[in-house]
Length: 187
Image (cartoon, rainbow, N blue to C red; front, top):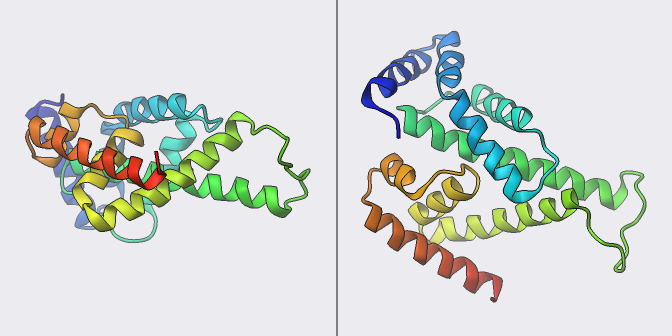
């Protein structure tokens, strides 16, 4: 858990970044860098993906820093946006690997060939991304909880604090999200 004294500098840096200070976003990201590496490491370990932890964190930063202006309001919001960016990086990577299988000069994958760890992880990430999009249309907060748990690697207590809800509400939403995902999977 992060103390209020740790959160204040990140919040101030994010306010400066929203005001146009180019270096402030980098400083805010540096302040949460170790947390992000921990989240990425646990995610990649669970997926058995070949993606490197540091590369995932850096790619997520590039997604946040490029394009649209940053909307993060505080440390928790930055961590949540970073988890979403990690998800997007992994989904993009999985799609690219899947596209390579269809015509990237690779040997064709047959029905009898087994999927390697990276290929299986790519399929898993793409399937989860589709399920999360469906869940997001039904229950946005439940989708955010799944995203933070699965892609961010955060505990229930950390997620409840990030979202400003009680642990009990989080557990109820988590059960509802799991039930939805299992029903969609047909399990």
